[in-house]
Amino acid sequence: MANEVNMSAPAGGGGFTFDADKIDAVIKKWQDLRADLKRDYDDANLMANVKAPGKEFASEDWEKLANPSGKAFLEQNRKMQEYVTNYIDALTAAKKKITTKESETQADMAKTGNQAT
Image (cartoon, rainbow, N blue to C red; front, side, top):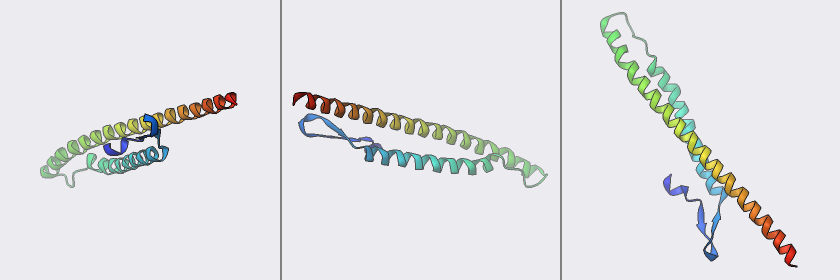
């Protein structure tokens, strides 16, 4: 995804243009990743809360070994979801800021153009 983060392209005259559709596509991919992580989290809950199949020492040992592994996976998944959510929020905020700035610039240019005539 790192290659897709460049949402602006050189424009004539040395400036940059912003392509909202490209950033929307990147945000959508991150949202899809977050949805996958949430599904994985639900599955990991089963691993983290496994119960021993029997009441003998072998089953109890198996439960003691399985649950910490599942809990570690849950924690890692939670951290990944948090990272992805923060990244989505940052991309969304950047898009909003750039879009707002572009709108303001266009309005200023239109106002300046009207005053020149």
